[in-house]
Image (cartoon, rainbow, N blue to C red):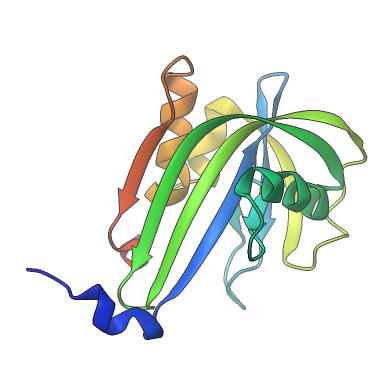
Length: 160
């Protein structure tokens, strides 16, 4: 089966997203987002959409500060993930970077979508990131930190 994406181009929404992985003392920082009213929080790495024309490596620093109150330096690219929903006509291209804390105070009061911030032990990551498009890439990187950044494709994330 082949899909003619050029015909549907105007109907699709595409988002460039930057995520940051901050690991300290065997724990990783996650953001609990209120993406769907009346539903449980969706946990993800801190980050968000890049502005038009903004490089994603700059977006991760800005979004991390906006969501967490922390100043970070972006390190190496750890993965690229594409998640598509034909049902919702949405396409997300996420670039995730390792980040290092430079300063700031941890708070979620600066972003209304972020309801909670939590350093989670790496051994408990599956409990917070059960969705393949959010959890599989970071779990793979944690298990293979010396490998080059890996590309992931999730053809229908609404099935998660």
